[in-house]
Structure formats: structure tokens, C-alpha cells
Image (cartoon, rainbow, N blue to C red; front, side, top):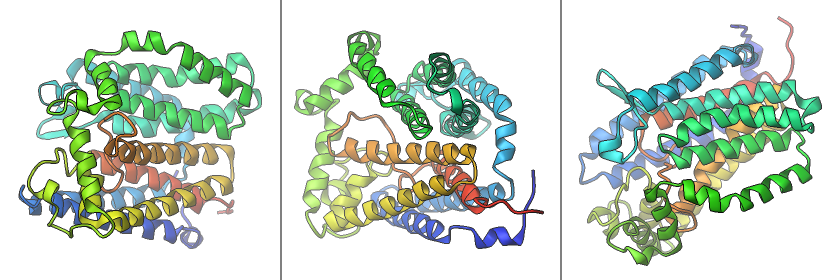
Length: 368
């Protein structure tokens, strides 16, 4: 379990750590501006504490050989599904957010699905690496998809469509990298298209409204469409150079809702302009590019699929959040990784980076 050698430190991807730190600092600055009228010191302090806890989690993970988690994939899978069942039975949040997605223990509240995503990525990576030679067989595909479907159904029942789509994204990513044939992908896509009418009938009323408002936000400009309309106005008002930190009209006057969480990208676009938004996108691109390279250089299939799943998860969150703020995707409530305010979300994403660095650091076998 704990097999560490000083030679491993030399293999650590310090470039990835540097990019991660830059994005986190960038996020703290923007959160400070977004919460100027909401006791920004408290939000900044909490975010910094979350980042520090995240880096501590990374250090702890680096001490453990990532293959240790592969040996525990069945207990991890059972524990993850038990957590999701606990959310359905004892969850909180419906009165405030419209869905029971959180668990409260004493004065601590967290969203289990943020950590379950990591656990299921580990389990899928192990299962697919074990079944790689038979991945094109229908029975194997059914087993893998069914394995991923159980937590997806439990999360969809909360209901949480955005996180369910995240599961679908990293499941597809792992299978694709494992060599899933294109004909299987096309058949799956065709089945998905044909099942859309049935999926529509199974959606909750609020989920249908989200999709309809996504197609035409002006149908309810002061209600369900308000978030998207204000977000696009906020982003557009930033133009090239932005209005300046703490000077955003939409942000500082309170027209933009959820400005320090889901719509943080709108805040930085208004106050730092297109140049600020491009800077963040470049940092994200470097981070994801490094993760892809780590997946390619991993010493074993499990490491490759583990990093692939984590990378697809991070990429989906980034794309979904930014697309949501500019009206290219329905509002799903997915924050922006390492930038949006939020303790459990920050910690879960840091854990993903810790696993990725772990695989990178152990890409070559070392005899102890």
C-alpha cells in the first residue's frame, strides 16, 4: 500500500501542479469580486481552506500506490451505492434546491455524488482493464454498462440529471480509450436517439422546463429563463478587456444569480473580458492536455483508464459549465472546476488530480 521512494518525487508532474495552482488562485480572486456584497472575506477564507485541504488530499494520495485502489474496487463500488441510497433515504436540500442531494452529519453538509464519481471511475477502470480482451463481446459490454448504470439510476432518482450525464461522459471515455469499436458507438448513439421520446416522458416537469427554456429563454424571462438571459448579458458586457475587477455592473448590482458558484464564468467574463476568459480556457487546455499525456504514458491499463475517467469528468464539468453560461446547454447546476465556490466539489476535483499525479509519478516500475 505505502510504497514510496524519493525517486518518485522526480517523476512528479510539477507543471500540472503549477497550472492547477494558477487556476485556483484565479478562482479565489474572481470569487472575491463576485462576493463583494456578501462578506467576501468569509467566502475567500472558505475557498482557500478548501484548496489547502485539496492539496493535503493530493499529498496523502501520492503516498499510496494507485493499484491499491484496484484491489478494493468491489468494496468501493458497494460503499458508493450505499452512499447514494443514503441520500435517497436521508438526504437534505429539497426545500432549498429542489432536490435531496446532500447529507448532513452534525454541522457538516456534503454532496456524496461528488465523491461517488471518483469511486465509480476507479471501479470502472478496474473492471474494463480486467475485461479488455473481451470488450467487444455483447455480454461484456452489458456487464460494464450495467455496472455503471446502477449509480447513475440512483443519482437520477435524486433527481440530478447533470451528475448523471457526467457519469455517462466518463463511462464513454473509458470504453472509447479501451478500444470500443465505432459500430458499437454508432449503435449506442442510434438507440439513444430513438429512445429520446421515452426519455422525455420520464423527465420531471422541472427538467422538461429546463430544456424548453434552453431552447427559448425568452419564454419565461423573469422565471426559468432569467439565469441564462442575465448570464449572456453579463458575458457580453465584458467585451475584450472587461470592466475591471469589482466593477462589473451585472455582477455587483446583483442582477446575476448564483454568481460565485454556477455562473462564476460570467463574472470573470464581465470583469476581465474576453482576454480573461481566454486565459482561463488556455489554463484548462494545458491541464487537460497534460492529463491526456499522463493517460498515454501510464504503465498499465488500469492507470490509463483511471486517468481517462478522471480527465473526461473534469472536461465534462468545464464544457458543461461554460456552455451553460453562454446558452449552449441547459442549466444543469454544474460548477466550474477549481474556480467555483464550493468545498466538496473542490475537494473531489483535487482528489481526481491526486490520482492523476499518482499514475504519472508511477509510470515506470521501480524495484523497492
